[in-house]
Image 1: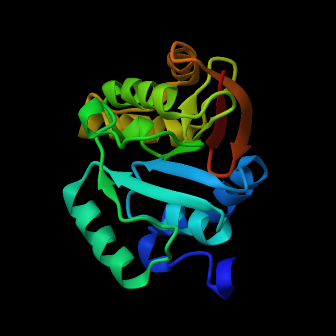
Image 2: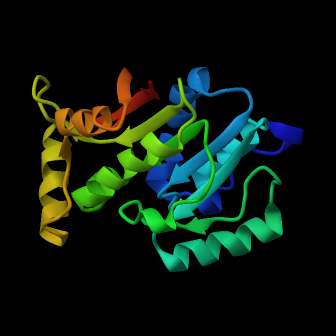
Length: 208
């Protein structure tokens, strides 16, 4: 932790986010650079990005979010609380290149977006990472539930998939092989897969 601060503010996490945070941080920690720029896509309430900024003070974390209300709420929180390496959030639509921030990043992080967005957002995410990650070795890190052809899908994940499709037919758990293929078409190779609690996966891709 930087300057003795707690790793996160519980106000910026949902109950599920609070439960999953230590697993996500533990998964990411061995693979993050000591210094650099991290772009978080679909930051939500901002709790994960804040925790990374506080536990990795050498990283500058830029949170981004599609939802305007979430951007405003996090902007107000960041202005009041900092820290300096947790930047004011930007609005970003992964499917719209005009909204992508400028510059290169050492890490692109996306937690729990791919299944709660249309497939065009995943295509855009991979294009963004392919264009904005430093080469070689830039890191794209994903977290969330997936369907794997050679692994039995947990009943809870199947039920979650159906509930998402009922809310929006364009949503739903994605086939891991489709995500990997889209990454590969943008110069990103899957280098690590980790099974994490609550039937989620942590996935790491590297730029060639």
